[in-house]
Length: 74
Image 1 (cartoon, rainbow, N blue to C red):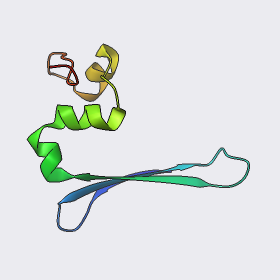
Image 2: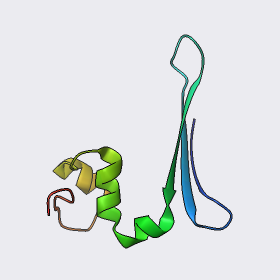
Image 3: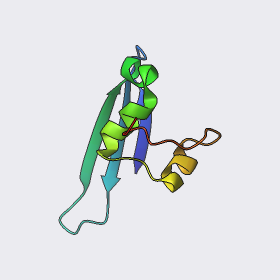
């Protein structure tokens, strides 16, 4: 199960995922992002969330239509 939604005020983007494969039961993960920070510099936010640079393939998949650049090393 996966879900992605904005809070009612539009200030926070929330993502949730469930790992249904675990033998011991369901495990859930929830992430929250401040939309103002995302809008200010989405590339830096993606880099921070990944804790590394995006590969060319990831950039193509998640940032289609824009030329590849390394957002973590400017």
